[in-house]
Every structure is written in structure tokens, then in C-alpha cells.
Amino acid sequence: MTDTYARTANTWRNWAGNVTARPARVESPASVDELAEVLRRASEDGLTVKPVGTGHSFTAAAATDGVLVRPDLLTGIRAVDREAMTVTVEAGTPLKRLNTALAREGLSLTNMGDIVEQTVAGATSTGTHGTGRDSASVSAQIRALELVTADGTVLRCSADERPDVFAAARIGLGALGVITAVTFAVEPVFFLTAREEPMPFDRVTSEFDQLVAENEHFEFYWFPHTGNCNTKRNNRSAGPAAPPGRVAGWIEDELLSNGVFQVACSVGRAVPAAIPSIARVSSRALSARTYTDIPYKVFTSPRRVRFVEMEYALPREAAVDALRELKAMVERSPLRVSFPVEVRTAPADDMTLSTASGRDSAYIAVHLYRGTPHQAYFTAVERIMTGYDGRPHWGKIHTRDSGYLAGAYPRFGEFTALRDRLDPDRLFANDYLRRVLGE
Image (tube, rainbow, N blue to C red; front, side, top):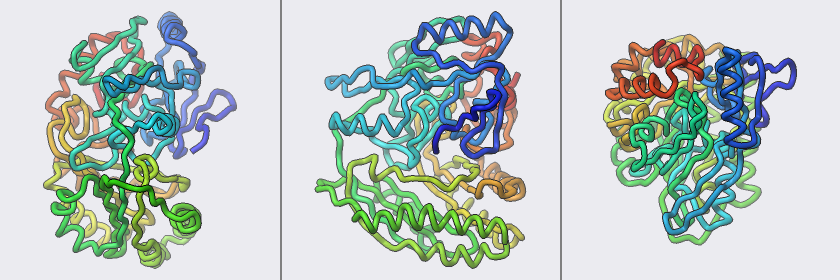
């Protein structure tokens, strides 16, 4: 996941390559004041504005034909407050750099997703999450935000200051303003012990509630066309660090999970009939292992095989039924699915447009190798997920519009009313926001 910006003719392309845009101009402000000036000039010129991170969203959330604001120069840690146990970071800082900088300070986020290439603003604005019984998404760990609104005002918000803005802007979709800084809650760095173990589909689904209850962070992957899953349980431990051996770690994380998997996906795209056989081999290739390390080295992993993705958040109690229905759909269809299906959980939170807003949630994510036709598979999956009151991940492929989403989110009207107040002229609009939030 290197630089996702094409260098010719101002063409921008996201990481997966399924979204492109040709902005009228591209700006890289180096300060809040410069950003406010960028917004002022765009408004005068009748152009819309969209901030963009590393392009890891699979939707057109950041696409624009107006002004594309790149965060390259808005990076770094502003302040570490050890009394309050917070860190304030510039919005364009990649999660990878944040994690390593915090580790040097002896600090860590409580929970995180498995991909670290996103900027902090891009990740939080779309609701990036990992898995957790008690700890929620990256956005739920925010304690304060700074954003520049359409009229150039620098707005600061927290639970105590402008709480209505804070509830919405932590997952703001780029619709309320341009985030310039994020303050996260942190804690002293700790150890996690990861236990990865193959498990049959029937067992993991029958024991799902128990596995979630007994582990701080539980997730699993089901390999379509097989009855096989790979499970991962992360729990705090006293240490000491016992990371995977260099050779063994390279074999699992690079050779098998990236190198061999890349070849398998390429063969499957060229010869779809081979996918079930490949899946049976792939699902047995990863062996059980246990290791201990600091959080970001356990939560995160390299993802070099490019793909497209759809993910839905369901009420947690619906997860197993929905997954069994998905499996039955794949087995009776002519679909050939080369990527595993990922299942994670999150506790309820209080953010207006969080996919876990007001309810304990389970996430079911489906993927296909980049360049593989995905419409038939994703359409069938989406039909299942919406049948269980699913909420689509804001940064992943879906077809839902404001009519559906207004019913899925009890506080949807709060968000759109705030947007009307902060951006009445729709400086930050684009086609994606018009679809999901309404005109």
C-alpha cells in the first residue's frame, strides 16, 4: 500500500483501483491556516473540496472533480499528555507511524484494525475497526477533534465541548469539515498473546458466543467452498515478548499469506473452476501458532494482495445465522470465491453514524481479488445482510442510499441536521455523500 496518487494529469486512484477521479486541482496545505485558505479559494471558485487519505476506502467517499486536499504535510504528533493519557496527532499521520511513535513513548492504543496504511483522519472518518469484546473502533478511542468547517472556522470538539459535533465528527465521512488533528486516549504499552488455530466451520459457529465472551479480541476467517476456518484470539498477558521466529513469521505472514496467496488468487481469476480446490489447500496451509508481543505487532499484519471488499455490521446475535445463510448461498450458486470471509465483533458505542451505534455488533466482510467481477457475489451477500438490519461499512462497497440508512441509524437525522448547519452550501459534497446522506 504505497502512494495511491497517480502522478499524471491529476488523476487520483484508490488503493484497490476501483475508484478514480480527476480533481480540478490538488492541494497539500502545511498548516490549519493554509487549509482555511484552500477552502476559501475553492468556495470562491465554485469548487467542492474533499480531503483524502491513502485511498484505502473502496467507495468513492473521497472522490471529487473539485479540490482534492492531500494530508502529506499535516503529519506528526503535536502533544503527549501523560497525566490525561492522551496523544494529539496531525490528521494526515499514517496509523503505522502513530503506532511506532507511541511504542517509543511506552504507549499504545487499546484496540486497532489490522491495516496500518490509512491516515488517522481517513481511518476514523470511515469507521475503521478491529475486533473486541469490550474495546471498540479506532474512532471510539478519540477524546477530541479539531476540524476546519466550510466557512474556515477552526472548530474543536470533545465530550465536554460541542458534544453534538463530537458525536458526529468522529465518524464524519468528510461531510462536516476537514479534520486537522485528533486526540486519542492511550494507555501504557502492554503485551498481547495471540493464539491462531484452525477450526471447523460448524464448531466455530456453534461456539461463537462462548469464544467472543471468553476472549478480549476474537475473530475468524471462513474459507468459501470448504468447511474450514482459521481463528485468532488476542488476550492481554504479562509477557515477556515471544514474537514468531524470523523464518517462521516470514513463512506465515509473507510467503503464505501474501506471496503464495497472490499466486493462488491470480490462478483463480484466470481459471475460476480451480478455486474450490485451491481453497481446500489454502485453508489447511496455515498451522496453529501462539506468540506474544506489543499490541500493534499483534493486531496488525501486512496486506499486499489487493482486493475489493464489502462489509456489513449486524446485531451480534444475528451473526451466526447470517453467516450460515451466506455459506449456503455460496454452496448452491455457481460463484467461485477465492478470498476468505472475515468475522469480527465490537461493543455498542455512542457515535451518531458508527456501524455499532447503540448495539453490540458483529461484522461480516467479504472480499474478492482485485480485477475479479464482484457484482454478483456482493449483491447476493448484501441481500442477506440487509435482511438482518445490516449497516454497511462507510468505506467499503455497498449500494445503500439515504432512504435505507435513515432507517438503519436512529440518529441519522441528527447527523444530517448538523451537516446542514456546518456545511449548508455543500462545499464538501460529492456523489457518494449525495447517495448516502441525501441531497
